[in-house]
Amino acid sequence: MYNEDEFLQLSGIQHFAFCRRQWALIHIEMQWKENLRTVEGQILHENAHNPEMNEKRGNVIVVRAMPVHSRKMGVSGECDVVEFHKSDKGAHINGREGVYMPVPVEYKRGEPKSNNIDILQLAAQALCLEEMFCTDINYGYIYYGETRHRLKVDFDDEIRNEVVKLFEEMHLYYRRGYTPKVKISKKCNACSLKDLCVPVLNKNKSVAEYIDKFISETGE
Ligand code: SF4
Picture (cartoon, rainbow, N blue to C red):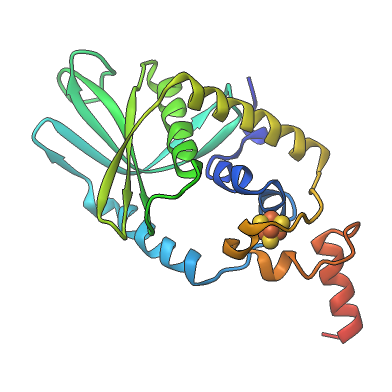
């Protein structure tokens, strides 16, 4: 069980699964370069996170921007949307009759990816919700802005184990303050940090050292 001061950011799992170095730059070295891709993503998220938009649709209660955490995995974050479906199993909700099954829904700007990083993030949210509500959650959805389609995701043992393993590894990296060295590959083309990361040709230097050196050399 982790203490709150050890919690890592849940959404970091998508960075970590994509590239260990990208995650370390963002979450250990706190370097972040905004580009169109991330800004557009934020706009879609802002809509999903608008608390005015909370609603009840028939037997479904929709809660937006719901904070979640897991002491077992040592992570905290926020679900874009959690739908509580009236069900014969699930959790009780304050002020509501009956039992509801939490179903996480994640909003993404683009289209379904060829890797499983979005699925890992959604599964991580589901594991947090399971721990918080003491219930099993078998599925969730990812809504893709480009295709305007909701993809149903089943949480099987394989994806659950992968989430747990990745968070364990992230805690190890974080405790050691370890940023892996640059390893250029095809995925660097789609990386939002490539301008910051790839110019670091001296592979023994951290990006923070690189930026310090750059500033002292240019006098900026
Ligand atoms: S540019 Fe490549 S090595 Fe650097 S953080 Fe991005 S994906 Fe990782």
